[in-house]
Image (tube, rainbow, N blue to C red; front, side, top):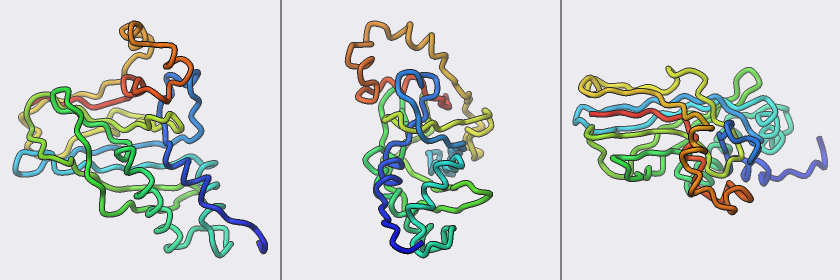
Length: 220
């Protein structure tokens, strides 16, 4: 398609604003939808070694990424173009902690920048798979929580089944774990005192979305 002006800006900003918050869609509508899988891996040393992510995006967003990154106009993403998508996401999501929420006895834990974000395109849908590691050692001790969500509420990351959020490693045998899907009505009721005018006018400017996120809780 000669003469078509290309820009990475739409996908860059979209991928930098992936939001998952379906329960409060009336407050901030997601524009991107993805099916997600998260595997929390325990190392032989008894610490969290990595978090493995798989994201499968909706057809519409996947098509928009082709438009933005298909440099040779062959209506598909070649290996070098897929690599460019991955590099764009790798850089743009760093400030959002790669949409990873981790707490250790209530303390927020950051993740280290991954080496690479792998990207593929299957059956008309964009796939991303990558692993992140806690930025500091996390022993299997106390109460640990893990989740994936976009605080900007731009996209919806959906864990369709509880099995899509799981643990791997023998060291977890000494722990219990469960997937928690917060009831939005209960969350709102429990946090009425902190729901300020700023939240209702601009929920993306707060961290309330974290309270609605599907998460896995591990107690050791």
